[in-house]
Length: 184
Image (cartoon, rainbow, N blue to C red):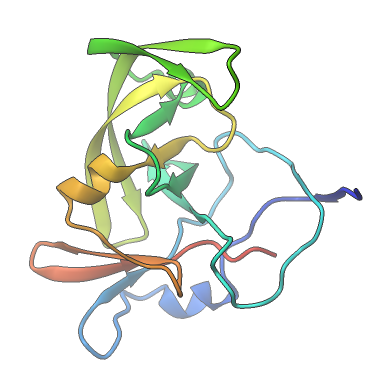
């Protein structure tokens, strides 16, 4: 296996076109990931950079703004909870509350279990058009700062387009299209 070091996933080159509040033909507002220096910079290692438009193996990665700081975001339809990283909570000095029904989280192996005992209410924005508030469980994780799972999708009636890897939702009677970062 060959590993190649890359800086980070960057925003789509067409981002400049969306500086002004943009919309497509049907009036849907299009929000691209927040641009700026990440709260915590991580390096990624991978074996091969895919250049095709095939989104079937790409998770939805984006950037959002929390308390004026740029943070990494993943929307994961396979997750049964919304999750905030412990590092996010600590670095932004966010206040947490005890989880009303704490539980243990176990990954694929039979080994380590992690007790989830804290929650945080996060206000975040993606692009210029979408602001929201979400209740998240707090766990130590390296994948991103904020992971939105099925509870967020259900509560907001979010629709996922698997071919384009985009999410569409309605807010204040307007349709908003969330676009992912482009792997590059």
